[in-house]
Amino acid sequence: MKSYRVLALLPLAALLSACGDAKEATEGNFRSALQDDVGNMGPAVCLEAPAPRMPFVMDQRVVSQHPGLADRARRADALAKAGLLEREDLSDGRQRYTLTKEGRDLYAREDGLEQGGFCFGKVRIEGVDNFTPAQAIDGGYTVSHVRYSYKINDLPDWAEEESLQKAYKGGLEGLDALQHKRAMMILTNKGWQTERRFAE
Figure 1 (spheres, rainbow, N blue to C red):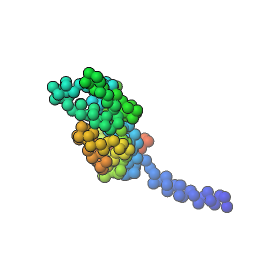
Figure 2: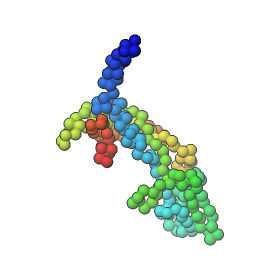
Figure 3: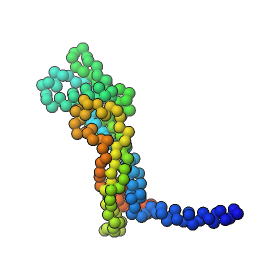
Figure 4: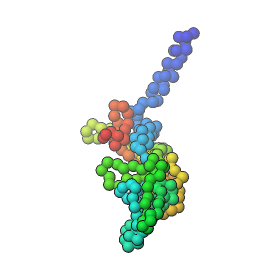
């Protein structure tokens, strides 16, 4: 009886193995490879900080004389309203901005970048819209070009602040909408990988 149960499972195991070939050019394999790469790259969105260093001080009198600084001042106040910066009015008329606890958690500054930013959100692959048949190219590689759709998840509530939307016009609009991109996938001995992951 015991051996019968084992033998009965063998055809099913073989079928599952055949259906799960990671080297096949399938929507499931591409989606998995894209999520493994794009979905794990880190925060999906970064809003540039108003100043290169934290904390920083702004003087509205200087801002009024230099219109180019107006955007930075607007962003600083919007970030303060969103709870990422704390604004302190100094006795000499200037404003001092420091990171709040939530601001410190989100603030990031990459090596080599002069200015940091507030980073948030994660990419989730929603589907593979279409892909080209696997094709051999020079160098012995097999590739497929994929068009995929994705959404940005884990968006904080403060990202919907109207003042922040205006201060970072274009940077926060449509974040919760379905978006589309293209990627070149490369076949490896372990299955499909994005071109970026393959080049690492």
